[in-house]
Image (cartoon, rainbow, N blue to C red; front, side, top):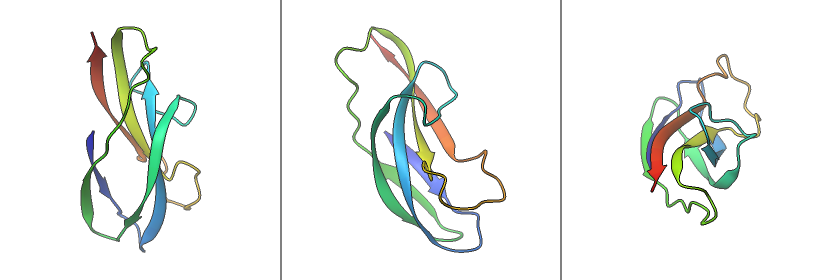
Length: 93
């Protein structure tokens, strides 16, 4: 999976990113967690990262959304909290 991350805030942050699998395009920390990692997001910089993700073998065939939630533990105080998740659609067949 390849996603782009950007820090539009006032300062740099070391932050945790969780990877989740969902049955819809609303990715939240309530979805099954597939993994995660920590990154440093520097203010004003854009980072594009590739992350290896394994889909559990017991998932039924069909459409899913795999996504990332930045600051998954809601540690950083932000003006806008609604832009911390993104997703891509995938089909298991």
